[in-house]
Length: 355
Image 1: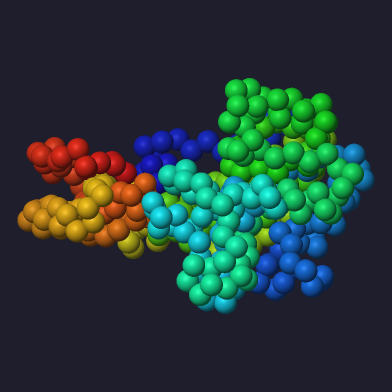
Image 2: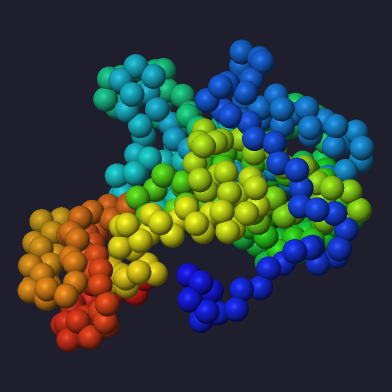
């Protein structure tokens, strides 16, 4: 928008840093249509599997991206549908590991539990993981390509000092054939032998109740696609998605930020979101749910006295509870908002985010 208003000068990068080839070709796999010839579900579609096999046969490397850790995104009872949740946060656990080493971990507070063998709601023993993460994808790939050298790059594998540098060095020396990773492999890596990038599920985070979500997904797709074919040979991206018609996905596939901007700016303008207005988010955190909501409601009513802005809330945040602290937020939308909140006397339970 600032470029449209001539506040900024728009500079377009028309070619890659090293010269060479065009941006990679992108193949979209619509997961709603199945994407699988086999009856057994896998995180890797038949299309992606075939291209991985071809890339390995050509002695080239593969990046497989999924922006979610763990071996499964949740664990659920098949009879009553109850999902195993962290008692501190009331949010689903993520399953890490397999077999005897499997653990349920809350990614919000860090609480760790052993997987249940019986549902505490209906007492069924039919408890199974649902969804997938980096560990699950890595496990699927090891079964498909047992001879391939496969590594994983996520917070669980790179927490030690210099672990990330070691993985990067191994990729440069071609000591790894397939690298599975989260957002940390999406940008900043210049790996000449990476010919194929697979995006397991491009929709992760797309439908969050956050107006920045489409922009974040578009950026992730364009960044991770840029890891393929960075030298002589044009790269290939296989993108698996449940929302191939979404404008952020379509623009990401086309590597067209102008296309994305034209769609996104219309939505932002009609909703009154930035850059057409400023937003300030006030958040209260407390172990007393009723008191937290009451304090938030009183502050919201006080703020509504200012007719020059719009007040939304209070409403639960996402997530609504973390580490036994309930969270409620108030959104203030308008102009010159800093003056409005500068005179507020907020206690230590409150946090301010200038959006």
